[in-house]
View 1 (cartoon, rainbow, N blue to C red):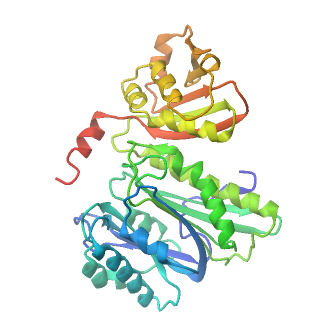
View 2 (cartoon, one colour):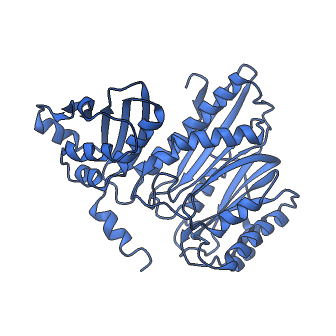
View 3 (cartoon, one colour):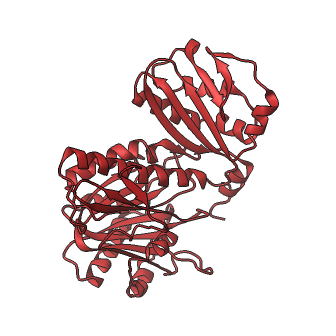
Amino acid sequence: MTNFKQIKNGTISTPKGFSADGIFCGLKPAGEGKLDLGIILSDDDCNWAATYTKNNIKSASIDYCKEIKGRIKGIIVNSGSANCCVGDQGLADARKIALLAKEKYQSKAPFLVSSTGVIGVEIPVGLIEKEINNFEPSEVGGEKFSRAIITTDSKTKNICVEVKTSKGKFKVGGVAKGSGMIHPRMGTMLGYITTDASVDSKILTDTLRESVDVSFNQIDIDGDTSTNDTVVIMANGMSGQEINNESDKQIFSEAIEYVSKFLAKLIAEDGEGISHLITSEVVGATNDEDALKISNAVVSSSLVKTAVFGKDPNWGRIMMAIGNADAEMNRDKIKIYINGIQISEEGKSVSFHYQSVLSALNNFNVDIKIDLGLGKGRGMAWGSDLTEEYVIFNSAYTT
């Protein structure tokens, strides 16, 4: 973080020219402090880029976003309904919500729309139409926005960093939601990033894709990929700092990756029913791509998850998960560590202090390090264990 610092209590609306808010419309059951509709707004229109779920069944809100070309004014996000599998009404509703926002702010540029909630439930757009004028976006409204977009999350997830280049400073803000239906290739999660740097759409697209690959695509809660996953980055240029040379592009890329990884880890820490955060670090791979695949395979394994939940130092399950990855490896060179304690070498068990490993597995953070002994490739992934509480919660999600 030599070129940037994290801003205390920073949010999506901290970068210059951005504002945000969250309100309650009745899209979710009423409750103290509950919000269910959020908005991010920019004073100036924004260049933007987005990545979406690779699930073949997608929300109509994503279909709508894919129609949008050119600069945007902001994003409006509803919770309570995924706006998925509701027929033609889904796309019509997404267009209507975007139009309501556009008309309220008398904008020529369009708004994007995101949705999260129960699949197969239409958005009660009439409630949004009735309440949308209650929005009062401000530069301190990012926290309310983050509350409006959560569903089963136990906490909000916000960050902002100030970035220094040779020419000046700019900010990058971020917010995310997600705690279940999370699996690499983007899980049931929404993520939004704002920056007041001036960045063209191609740089935004390339940078976002690269950062998502090593952050949001490297988390797993339950092995399921959602219909609604969306990560959007918006740049309004209001800091006056232009990203137009290789040095500044590198600094910008590092900042976006830092924000993305920070949010991804918060999602993993907030997994439904979680009792352990699993971090899988792979070193010594032939290349970074292989390291990412293997670290992913470990945190995605149900057997690894259940072993961690049960505090069982069964390194064979880790070895099994490694072998399931489509990557180069040599069984006889692999070393495995749990919270710094080596439990396997050259593909075989090594003598270790059993109680020390059991004690390490009592920690909330369980770090699994794998050394493949092949090269310099590195990669990390994050996930939760699989608990009884998770099963009970998701067995009656809509009842």
